[in-house]
Length: 185
Image (tube, rainbow, N blue to C red; front, side, top):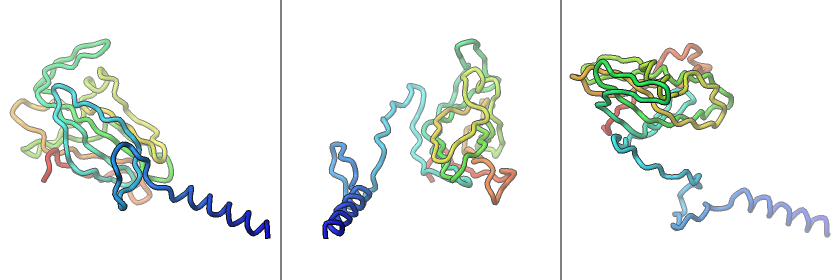
C-alpha cells in the first residue's frame, strides 16, 4: 500500500510541476495567457521609431522587426566613420530559430525594398563598422537581436524587408525570402 501511495504522490508532484501557471509579474494573468519570459523592455533609441508589425516566419526562423531609423548621414563606430552615398537606414530585428537543429544564418543577406520596388543589399561597410554579425550558427531555440544597415538614395523610402531564415529541408538553398512590410497593413 505504501508503494502505491508513494507512486501516487510522486505522480501528482510531477504533473503539478509540469502544469504550473504563469509566473506572477505584478499583473494577474488571464486563464488563457501563456507563460512568458521576463525579457526586459528596451527604450527606443532617440532617432528610431518602434515598429509594431507581426512576427513573421521564413522556414523555421521567426523575425520580429523592432525599430526603424531613416535619414542617417554617417555611421560612426569604434574604429571608423563612414558617410552614406544617400542616407543610411537601420532596421533593428529579433530572430529566433524555432527549428530542431542549428541553422547557418546569414545575418547580412536581408534585402530592403523601397517604395519604388528597388532592392538594396545590406551595406557591408556600415555593418562592419557597427560590428554586426555576418554568418551565425543559430542554434535550436536561440534568439539573436541585431541591426541591419542599408544605404538608400535620398529620394526613396523603405517599404519592406525581405528576410532569409536559412536553409531548411524544403528549401536547401534558402532561395526564397519573405517580405515583411515596415508599416502595419
